[in-house]
Length: 459
Ligand code: F0G
Image 1 (cartoon, rainbow, N blue to C red):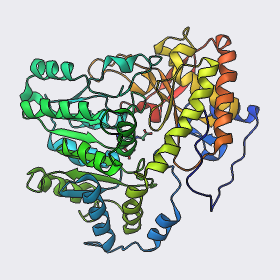
Image 2 (image 1 turned 45 degrees about the vertical axis):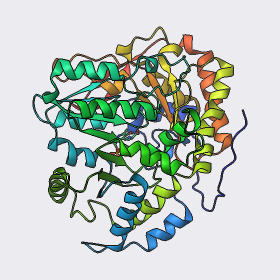
Image 3 (image 1 turned 60 degrees about the horizontal axis):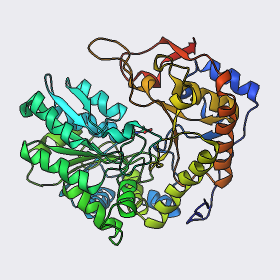
């Protein structure tokens, strides 16, 4: 498997320096075995997230200097909404400061006590905002997603038969939103096919439900459709993106991913006459800022307007997905199981397969994340039962469908040699996996989104 060469050259660099193993062991213990608690300068390769960690281009930095900081109606606001309308084909575009801000603005307009939201898989903050709005979140991903070793296309899909069954069981009047997460982050950055988007939209139409797209990684999703879905190979990514969004009613997007900015988000509504727009503007003014900036500075809106185009370029996406495939090929040789095929924003290692002797209640994916830091200064995160948390009604630990340790790849940041270090670290840990006997226990946790702050210790 050849590494796909970078379609850019490097103009500015940031120094990084590995600590010794002994230093890393002390640092992770001081952070209560929570990777979010580490100082970033103590990390050598930071794969905690691909969110806001990309490298902006010289065009984006030039845009930063052009930012118009007028409170109302700035030039940069109009650049952003023009780009948003052009790319997504939606009439109404609203800046917000990041994805979860969009969730906070949008979800209470659809959800409340006694309501349900159904998704292929909710991301953690998205689930939290469903719950904060008083509703309950239900995941409804295809069964294929639950078997990481089986290589199948479009493992991010909604299980549409189950969706319809759920709507009938719960009563359509109790379903406030259907949310399609593209790509499906928690299922391993797996894409959703156009066919599945269409079928989900048809079901929503039949029951008069709103289809909301969680669009954080829309460009990667479009790339997979072009590459893997029959009938799309000759279409442009721009046409595929427009077609994807034409099936939804509303979207929210964390622009910190595919739009390659360090901060930003967007809400979109397809139809300019949709009554929800007034509510969005009102919530924005209360929570985010006036609706022509929505919590973003003018310079950040300018960089986002440019990044929306750069993040949807095909040669960039080929290089990006190629990086994860290059790493995956080395793991195949070593017999390390990951959500296969590789997802859009990185690799999701099946920690339950690596540590079959550690139960979900002791968080095998968190164990692997800690080992990776100790081994090579690599920071990853748990996308498993540790992240999922407790049942909000009973307080009992939930069992995730997956115990993934996520290697989230920042955009345009790491080189081929860094990927070799990632592979070497994983292989070294696999070789001694049977000697790692103890899992983790939580010694303190907050009531919601606990994985960001919880304190852990060895069992
Ligand atoms: N939706 C999805 C699918 C996400 O992956 C994220 C964030 C959000 C919404 C929230 O957006 O962070 O801008 O407020 N995901 C990051 C991650 C944090 O690491 O996967 P945000």
